[in-house]
Length: 81
Image (cartoon, rainbow, N blue to C red; front, top):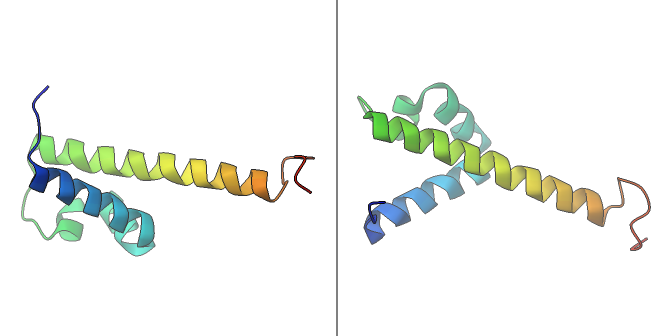
């Protein structure tokens, strides 16, 4: 597996953070990645990265939702309440 540069890694982290915190950007990234990223084209690798970012965001959101449900005891008695 090819090691990515620190600049590349930072761009990926920034993209994930923006997709997590900006719902409109996330929707645009999913529906029109070229417009969301301000690009005229994406390589197959670029499209793969967009899919990876969206999958990562979905996974993080699911974990946050699960933790919130546990903290709020929405799935039955949790021992906290």
